[in-house]
Length: 219
Image 1 (cartoon, rainbow, N blue to C red):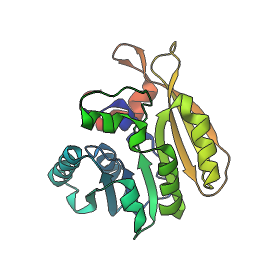
Image 2 (image 1 turned 30 degrees about the vertical axis):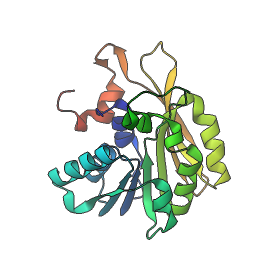
Image 3 (image 1 turned 90 degrees about the vertical axis):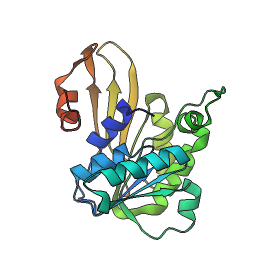
Image 4 (image 1 turned 45 degrees about the vertical axis):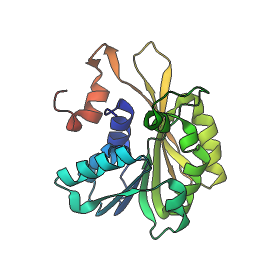
């Protein structure tokens, strides 16, 4: 699984104003979010969970090859197993969840697992955040824009309130494609803005460059 724009966006955008000590990356894939957040924050404990065996093995390999291996740990587990016996509360929970809901599936089980929402329903994700988030914690996700209203309503049922929303467009003329959402347990004024990635093919906007340049070798 290649590094995708969604993961880079969330890793660079995710608020860390609460100076998280502990971070949880749900559905870590190959570990990009954890690796970005270990560089952006002073967090001492960054736990990642990944259910797919190949992705889990690659995540562990990436963690061990990084200079921050002592702060990174990946569990080979599903979210339901992880939530059953929670040992810790987390100051920051992040997820780039699977969200393809079409009815067809391919022959590639690993890719299906990563791409289809039935691998991790939004309800399970939000409930886990509610259970595992510390009192002043932040829960941040990237989802399709068309799911934004439903996701926010679901989060509200679990007493999680959006305080930052960034809607992402590929170019100035295309429709909004993604929503970056950050939630907390306390209600505050919601900051809403928009991010455009490109003006033309590989012509990135200043806003996108400013947000992500620390993580690209060529930008």
